[in-house]
Amino acid sequence: MRMFAAACLMFAAGLVRAEMVVEKVEYAVDDRVFEGVLVYDGALRVHRPGVVMVPNWMGVTDAAIGKARELAGSRYVVLVADMYGKDLRPADAAEAGQASGAVLADRAVTRARAAAAVEALSRHGRTVLQPGRIAAIGFCFGGTSVLELARSGADIAAVVALHGNPEPVLAAGKGEVRAAVLVLHGADDPWVPDGNLRAFEAEMRAAGADWTLASFGGAVHCFAEADADMPPGCVYDARAARRAYAMLHDFLGEHFDGHGR
Image: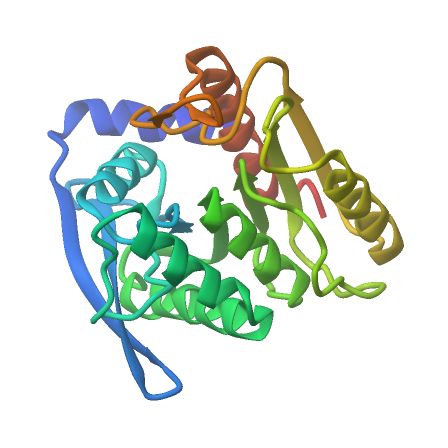
């Protein structure tokens, strides 16, 4: 049934010229204003699942919005989440490191800001969203952030972390992880120690979570981002990226349809 529905959606998309809507969305967390970007195909007259996309440590950039457009296509309504605040847009890696480090230093802050993005997507995307069908994905810093969202007990369908750090700094307790979790990891990532992976596995088992960890041979950090080119640690890997995105879409489809619960 899911395959038939997807085929119908793709057929409809082929009949209608894509009209990608890209609009800024403001929301507040603790009296601070944040500005994400909502992306979807406005030409489609069907409701779609929603995806909060937390970008890498550079935050809301043109590159991140471009990724959101590709992700959305005819499948999803996507909100590019702002984890820093409207007034903070890192200009370079040094500023990005400082900004992301400040957010991850307090995992309660990480969780609150990711949860606010989910609420913003639900509110601002309601005219095109399928009710109750929301997931979150993230890249690098964003991957770490969406895992914190899962640990917080967020009532969403699924969480997918692409080359994030799954280390359980603030581990989930039994029954606290409600979303299905998929971690897509570069097997040769120099920035994520094997011990962090083992700790994540132990945490997920103890929590009784629905979780999957996939490691891609030869891939390092940033492997799923086509513009990543900071060897040796952060490099795009086309083969690993292709496989990772296939797994991501299959995982989201499974859990949006409720078959994973």
